[in-house]
Image (cartoon, rainbow, N blue to C red):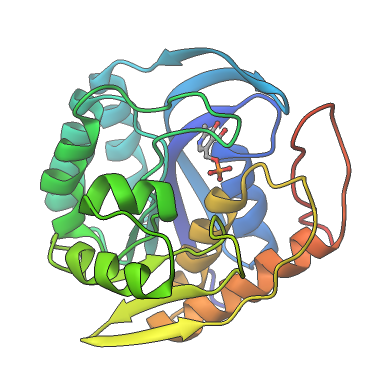
Length: 259
Ligand code: PLP
């Protein structure tokens, strides 16, 4: 049996619901071998982030060299990257190793409201990482910041997605989960706009949903799926992980990867 490997470049979440921990759980459950390059340690639980300790940029570079020189990942997911310096190192290394199937989740704010990116990080991410990305996966608040558009309905989502498509990534998945009406996502790929229908699942425990979705897509790309199928299957995965109804912690708890 052939083994497919994927790499997550993201922050650690001590509560295990988001970040590296969510990514590894998702990759294993989706049948790929998971590797990690950690950008920061966060001290957090389901109620919020207490503190963040970034790794030095050279050390992130060392982790990426160690991974790419040995077990080449067939897909790379990028999550929380809190500083311009770290973004720059990732850009350099991914270009050098010609990383493929790069999925960028432009994480800016934790679900609990804490900021996970310093000033101007978004501009650097657009410049350094979007041109390397096979897919970017902003939610509505992130898409508003990146596109400068206000998003109130599906027409606004289409307009914002068009602007985001001009920022250099091959494809854009604009996630509708933060909209009031439904949980439909908009995929822009190869000049097409494809609505991926989603049912709204009433579960207040949503910590790590963004991390999980982008890691599931990266896993599917590592296994050789085309983008649309990779996104549709990942959306099914996240729906099941939400529907399983795990209820842990005092705040917004994690998903169930063992549904
Ligand atoms: N990465 C880390 C390390 C985090 O702690 C969080 C949220 O707390 C995220 C990413 C984003 O989480 P979500 O998938 O809920 O948007």
